[in-house]
Every structure is written in C-alpha cells, then in structure tokens.
Length: 225
Image (tube, rainbow, N blue to C red; front, side, top):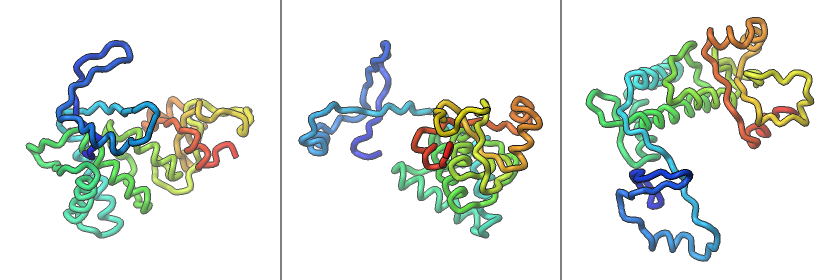
C-alpha cells in the first residue's frame, strides 16, 4: 500500500457517517506536505475489503486464462505465473499464491485475474468459449469485452455494441442518454441470435449480462454517433 492508503476497521455506521479505527498511525506530516496550499476539502475513497480466502472457482478461472495464453503464445505456464505474480506484487506490494493453505484472499485473486484479463484483451488472445467466470470478475470481464469490441461469447473481434436489456427502438441515437442503458459486445452471429431467441432465452443460454458505461466510455466507443 502507498503512504496515502491505510487499513482500518469499521467501528460504527450511522446513516451516511462511518467511524473507522485505523490499523496504523496516520502520517499527518506527509499529508500536509502533499496537500500544501490546497484550500478545498479533503476526500477519501472507501474500499470494503473482502477478507475471505480465495475460492476453488477462482483458481480454476485463473489457470484457464493462463492456459489460453500458453496455447496462443507458447509461453510456459510457470513463466506466465511469474510474470503475473510479479505484476500483482508491483501493484499491491504483497505476494500472492494459489496453493493450498495460501492466505491470499478473494480480493487478491480477483485483482490478479483482472491483470490477466487486461493482457488477454490487449494482445487479442483467443479465449475458450464457455468460461466459468468467477463471480468477482464477471462485471470486469463483460466490461472489457465491450470496451475492446470483443464478442463476450465466442471472442470474435469487431463485435457490435448492443443495447442489451432494453432495446433502443426508434429513439434518436444522437439525443438519447445512453448512460441509462446497459451494453454487451456481441458478434454479428450472436447479435442476430439474440433478437431471434429473445432476451430471456438468450441470457439463460449464454449467461451474458449487460454492463453500464459512463459518458467517457460511451464517447470513446462512438455510441450514438
């Protein structure tokens, strides 16, 4: 953790006020140095840490991802582990292990899997159809599919960005607020199949979920022209 991050225990919650008990002493002098001259309010971001140990499903998902990278690149699995474990250490400042008896948490492995997914989408690694995606990474997986225009079912590139749960209909794409919708990336084949099957049957078959996008994401993807 950096010197602006502190572990704390939630001591009390009352309406929208939270009382925290810090595990380590707050470095006031460091804060004064960083914020010298700043007259505005001081803000903090609260992240609720999941203390549970990682799950078997997470381990299977992690190695399924690395197996696909191995098949495409020929990079040995032990080498891939070293690379991604090093990236995790560089990001978090701590080690990770997926062996039995490891103290790595659900959050730790979720972070590791996001690093691996970033690599897969950046380098266009073909992925296996029908991943059993760990629940902690479902949103991130479908979000990455949308942002890289990769079909979330078969992995084909240049996928359509579909207004997933609620059709746009005849509304003007240039004036509608697309942030109200959720989206999924579907190749032409699966996009057509969705409309033929209907949204309920399609979701039951493929377990696809739609994800929300912020205005910057929508602009980047040129949704609505």
